[in-house]
Length: 368
Image (cartoon, rainbow, N blue to C red; front, side):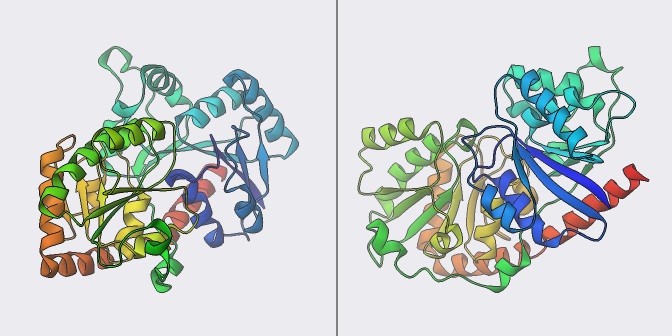
């Protein structure tokens, strides 16, 4: 049986991290023994859940990248790891530093974001070590097409790159959650139309654009409430912006939730104001629950949502356009119902089991 190490920067509740949990019940344990390693000690929200699902978890202890890469190298030797699959560039860069020499295990990498979304140090470190990867999966075609070397570095080897749409655990599609008590817990009136977003407070999620859209929406639909689910480094700034716009009665900060499907069940519309995006798992969850989406036309989002087929697409960084689409959705119940039903059907096309089977095919090829 071959040993596979899944490597990621942290195990907080983000989209890439949640994919590890969604995939765990569906891996082929007759062929592969899986373990998980993560770098940042404070980001461990999903560690216990992965352990419960039969994947031993190790923390590499953070610190400078070369330091934890050395600990990773030691872990690979100690645990006799046959293949490493890294997610997100920080983990991949360390893995490429650790996995060197003739006896190194094959290295698979999943790219979750378009390259132009990375800050210069991450972009260049990822690019300059990219050739050391044996196989690359990207979560959308848009992410795949963003992977290109500048002409001056065109001589670098480009590993095989393929788009592999990830998805949801099908159990979620079969067990629709109840929204009992969510509105009451968050102080949202029972009849208020609710626009929900699930996104950690980071620059690429464009929360400030969503707040400005909320300011415009309330002029047409004053009873509307915007429910922001998530946490992150920019939360304080976003809260201050909401106060500046006097949105205290319109915007509800729901914070971190471990019952996101239940919270989404209480919403009427799902909105995503991203300026960069790979493929949003939160969007897939909302669509699977029949929540019509209003999302920006960035990254892999148009690959999920056909405009006026499964939801509404708007330009990024355009609060008036975002607001107009949300108002349209809130004021047109027939459109909202039609798009919600179509969104549910569309989400069913994205099954985590399909992604797991393809990943394990590649593992087997590399280990043959």
